Length: 370
Ligand code: ZN
Ligand code: ZN
Image (cartoon, rainbow, N blue to C red):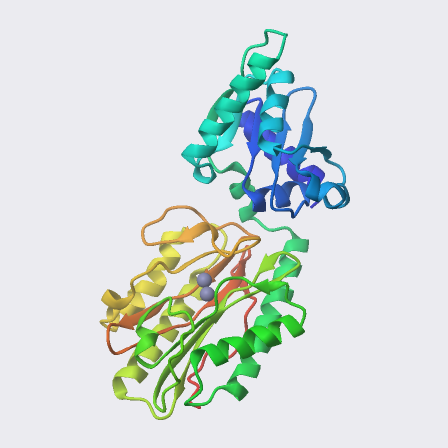
């Protein structure tokens, strides 16, 4: 989908929310709407007869903004946000929407101050724009990926699967979790990843009972789980997958937990289809763990949207009512974490379709003992 169409959709959403302009400052939203990837940006979209889109950034990004945001007017200013607020006043915008979930109290007060200062400096006595908190309109648009975005996510996920294969051949008892993460990330960069989607999780032995155990100096044990949760960024899009393997022979409790989490994960994937509520997908996974008497150790939600950011809407949480739609890309990642003992998680990223889903991360999930 072209950025022109995305900007039009966002402006339409702003109009439906009752504002005549939208100020977008969350950088992934700016990127989605304009193509600009710089770290300093404010984008204004106006609706009404004269639809306009203006991107404000600073002098470091003159060339980059013009190249990336072709089709959007670019204004270079030392203080982009102040310039954007001045532009709102000059353009006689009455109500400017902003995403309350992405705007700090400090930014809002800076926006109001900038408008007041611009009004004081201006000779014309136009009325000041009012800032109106609106829902995350751009995040909502970003939930549904177009075919080009899905293609990029497919490529990122495929790289993740390739890296997992490599790690199976690499991991050995006695090496540190950090060495595992370093090897994984080094291989990712050599394969063309722009970076990692998030800090790589390598959690082994007792540390596997921490859902977000970042790679530490702990050594992989002779016997125990190793959970690898990682993702790469390719052309701006994140991948996300988790696999848990076992080093050495497992105890009955470990095996029972693994089988239950795998069954829960597969039940979650099987429940995914356009029209199903995210709470029902969560329940499909959670009920399997309940039957296995492990649900009290499943301490997070079943999944989340992925895209330009690693965590996006929708959240697949217990009792949540949002409905899945074709083109959403979400993770299914139940896990159990027994404090002081062990933990494990299995995670796939899937694209929601009319009849089910396409799994982007087909790495094996059956029990692996190294
Ligand atoms: Zn993950
Ligand atoms: Zn995830």
